[in-house]
Length: 130
Image 1 (tube, helix red, strand yellow):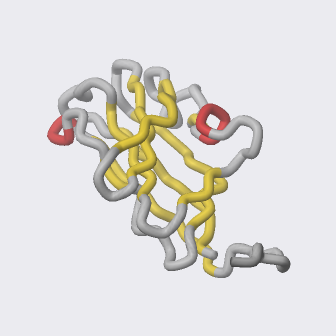
Image 2 (cartoon, helix red, strand yellow):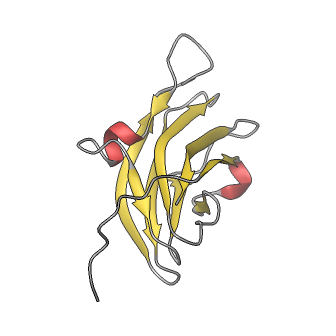
C-alpha cells in the first residue's frame, strides 16, 4: 500500500464535553465518538469547583483496553476562582500540542479519586474530525 502523498486537514470542527460528579466515582468517560477518518484534539480545557484538588487520568481506548497516557492535576477551584483553568494538552502532548485519535479508538478521562459531594469537574475538548 502506498503512503499518502497529500496532506489532509481537519474538515469538521468538534467540541466534546464531559462532567464528573461524586456519582461517577473513578469511572472514565469518553470525550465523544471519533470521526470516520480520525479526530485531532487541539485543546482539552479542565475546570472544577471542588473544594479539594482533583486529579484526572486520561486514556486512549482501542475498544477493549484503556491505555493510560497521563494525569492532570486540577488545584482547588480551577477555573472558578482566581485559579486559571488547566490546559491538559500541556501534560498529555507537550511536544506536539495535540492528540490524534484513530477511528475505532476513544479518548477518555476519569477522576483518580471520588469527588466531593455537590461539586463538579468539567472537561471540554476541542479540535476537528478529518
